[in-house]
Image (cartoon, rainbow, N blue to C red; front, side):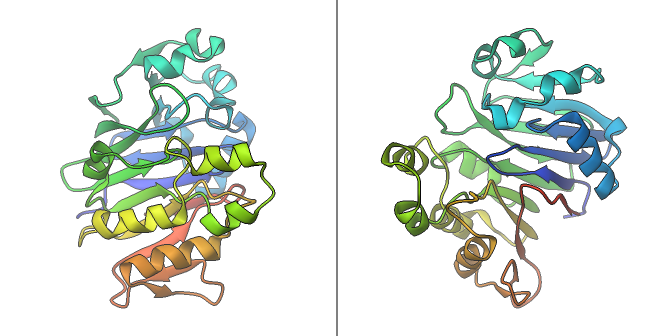
Length: 268
C-alpha cells in the first residue's frame, strides 16, 4: 500500500479518548473525550494541523469519548457524524448538528471512504470505522466486548490497525474492581482483552498490515509491556526494546505498539 493515511492518537484510555485520522484532503477527529485545550496542545506536540479537520466521528456516547465535544464545536464548523442511538443518549448531543448514520453505512469525508461497522458495547448503536483511499486503509475499533463479522471484515488487511486491547484477563480477575465491574469489562458488551485482540490479529493481519496500535489500555488491569507481549506472540513478533513496549516481526514489516492516555503518538 502507498501511505496516504496517518493516525495521530491524542489520548486513549478510560480518562479520555481522541484521535485524528489524516487523509489526502483533510482530517477527521474520532471522538472528543478530552478538553479542547488538551486536544490542541497534544495535536501541536505532534505537529498536527487541527485546521485541516473536516469532520468529527463518534464511536459512542460514553463521557470519555464525548466530554470535550460541546466546547470543541464552539470553534468548529465541520460536519459531525454519529448514530441516532449515540446522539439520543445525551441531551447536549441532540443540540448539535449531527449527520446521522447507521452503524453499517459508508460515506465520504476528507478524501476518504469511511465504512462504519457495529461494535458491541453497553450503549446503543456504537461503531468502529475503516478509512480507505485507493491506495491505503486504516482500521479503528475500540470499546467492544467482541468482534462481529462486519468488524472482522472491515479491519482485515488495513495498513494501520488501531484495535482495543483493554485488559489482561488475569490482572482483571485478580484486580481491585468489584465483581460487577469485572463482569461488565470482561463481558460480551464490555472491552476486548489482550487475548481476544491477539486472537483477532491472527486473522486481521495480512501482508498489507504494517502497524498495529493497541488502544484503550486499562490503567488498573493492563500494562503496555503485557499487552504488546501478548499481541506479539500471536503474529510472531519479538521485542524491539528492552521494556517490550514495542515489537516487530523478524522481517521488520509489522510493528506492534501501544497508545497511551497521556502521551500522544503518530503512526505514519
